[in-house]
Length: 149
Image (cartoon, rainbow, N blue to C red; front, side, top):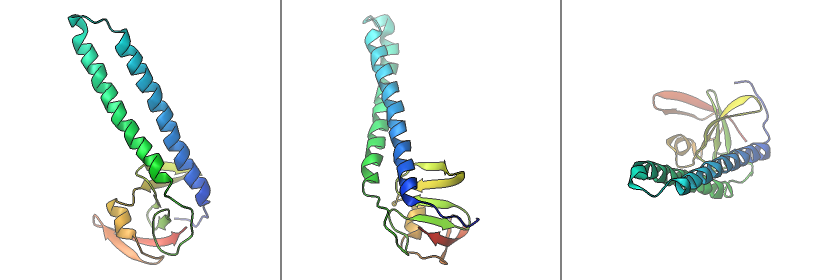
């Protein structure tokens, strides 16, 4: 990995904006599905279609709860500087870049690949409290912490 300096507040804003964008998209699909369920005639001929739409609405609602929880969890993520891995840390290893925040997964920021991971994830749990220069092995893959922002 080439040495680069990242602005953690910009990274945090990017993750927040990504979650907000997903919420807006999900709201659109949820409203569309609700409208479609209202438009279907109330006859037994359309029962299976109505059931499928209700199942889709249920799944969309579950996703919405998950995204709203992510937004709430992001409020706990601070931009404080630390020499050890903790919630809010941007950890650069010799293999990847991890933002300990929420379980958003892979994303690209300023042309680089990052992984937003939950502090409860096995990767974050393994790295918690470590400092630059510390090494660890997870799933038979060895990594060394190069930098912490």
